[in-house]
Length: 231
Image 1: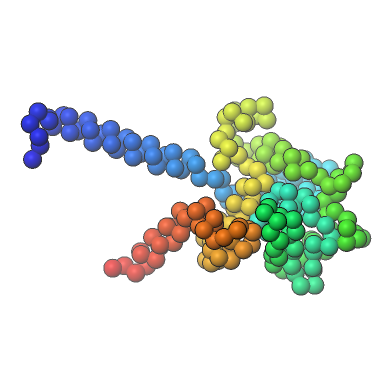
Image 2: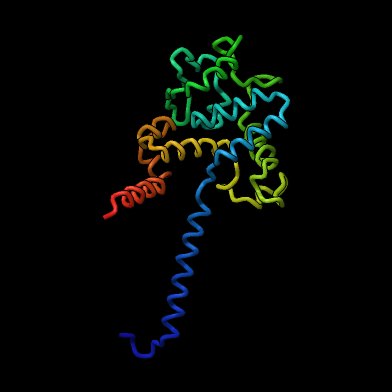
């Protein structure tokens, strides 16, 4: 029973305000979700690498090595020949964040490309050497994927340029090297890879870090199981 002086109109206004807040909360939650690339978007970026880069093979390998192994940008760019064990189809990450080394299985179909990349290189040679010296930087990778490849691939609205992308596109929706890592983890979880295994491949300190990052996917899984049970 409504309280004295609390009209039907007041109740409707209060409900509208509450619904508006809830809607805004959902929208804000969605806007904070990190960008996950679709297969179509991945192919569009590969096409832009082919069109824009002088050394197409090297930059496609930077892109694919990062994507297929869930690497951080710095981990990719600092890979050396010694980090590849092609006979056992393994990639070794050393000196990672927190000093945590890890070994990641190489997809069998990717081994021929890595073998081609490693051809003629000694153990201490960089996989992605810069023409100047050392290896390409994380920044060179980031500016290419965010400002060149993704923009030309139409992954942002038409009014976004390299000059205004930082103002016009929220950080979580910009396509960066970390987007590839996030896409890797998301697709593994969606395809049923146990979260503990994904955590190991990402090099997280503990599985709770992975869970807190991808808990929305776990909830989606639960919803799917509930629907299958059909109680």
